[in-house]
Image (cartoon, rainbow, N blue to C red; front, side, top):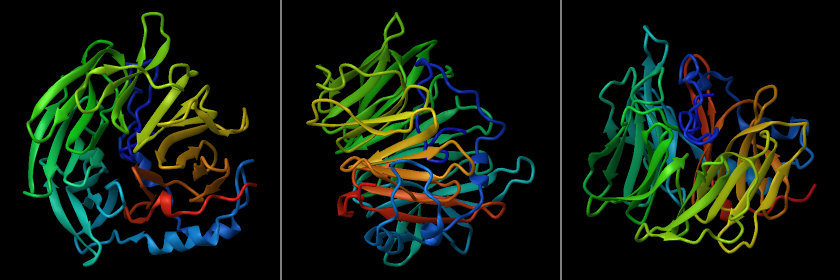
Length: 385
């Protein structure tokens, strides 16, 4: 599994500062069998929290369908705006004969009315470049491009302004082994973390209007996220203990870690959007979540030793993950009720923002995609099982 935003990047915190070795090809997660949401009612329940898909949810899936086929190729959705209105993807126009990898010609944006895609950014090396992350705040799309099929340590960060249509590069790999690049943006501010030395990572706050970059933190850090009006990141001490730290988004100045995040367990993966933060604890068994205003985190999913999980993401009150079993289906859990529902029978991945969740069904040899977008705030709570 190459990292979630190649199929929607999610940073793996493996002792902080280390990166999982890349698989033989960083695009191989696209090669799972295609499924459609039409067979929900026939799936057998696998998890203790699992309930049947409610009819309003099924209607939202149908209404939120995303057209991904174009006359030039297939679009793999990669980013979504905070309310689901803006959807971005990577246009794949074929397969490179030498590597077997998709040819990612450009990053595109969907026009829902015209049901067509327009160019945002053209890849310099389509047979190697691939978007691994992206975040859109209504004006700025900040995204990362990976430039190697076999290494995570060759990337660049770009900012596209939808008012001018212009793109500029705002950072690049320092040549130091570090975690997968993850970028976040809101209200004209972008945040990401970058390895600058062995086991040393800096957290950056970047003002897109003034081009000012501020170093918010420096240490044994995995990645950083915007949560409400805060920047939050996990940091390992010299004794190996992991703690959440925080800074103000408007200034980058350190602030007290919010109540509820001062004591956490053994963190494996983290995801954030809007005012929500979620992570996997222990041996990839338990999902915990925290929202601004909560006094303590809540357990969203815990099936003990029966089920391992991976690829966490969060939007509003919904948390998504894969179960590590046959087919690795996508599940979504509801913080409001503790129930969960399966949204794919096999494979797929999820992209999220403040109040939007895209579920993508990758295809096989022809690289076709079936996708839909959901608005968590518009969905009724899942019934308790």
